[in-house]
Image (cartoon, rainbow, N blue to C red):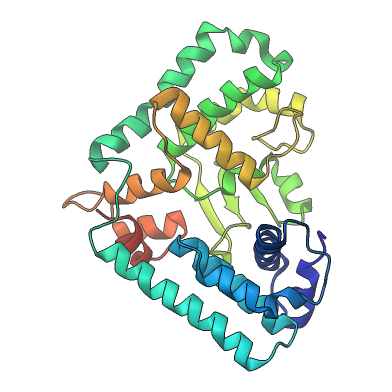
Length: 315
């Protein structure tokens, strides 16, 4: 049931975006345990011993913590007994403690050996995508490109974006290219590249740490502006809302679809099994040397705090 998140919103006053994440995790746990979709708005299965045993045996620390956190919210929303709530709170706290210890233990393996050289690869990879565009003469095809050809253009824009601005999480997936008037008339619930006369900006209203940092407005550097300007006629022809990243039917990509797209990009152009989090890790880990970027300012631009940078990313 797609409306289960409203139970959490109504009971706890959580924002819809956050409640949807918790509800999706609760549905996934139910699906994995009972092999069917959740239809009970009371979340009664969360109180069962079977659910508790399943969650505490999840091996991956991050998955265990996320599952316990979501269930804890579901139990609070449905006014479960304190005894049940505390059991899942303990799983959540223990998982978080174990994960922080793991991060600082030196046992964590990274998919890259040298962050500085890895970032040089990342920053220059758009040239390889551009070579494919030229070889296939996609700019000549223009607005008539098919979905496969448009994915090549998307890959080029994404790689230009990564090289021009500190890499974010998956905020790109719901970013629209808009005029100042369109931005003013929007609900400002998504992310927007606003084509101002005195300089374009990337206005972020929808991202994981929005509650901490608020609306973020990042200046769009010249190379990225030129790339977006070049692809704009194709975007306008494929999607009347100005969404940049589109699926095979030229509709907006979900975050999971965008994540899959990113993995394909790195596999195709770099031969690497990298994710967006890998790219963020490479970027942060590459600046912890004297004379390089200010890690504090970089953390803010990437939407995480300095503690996250130290524990989760730095080599």
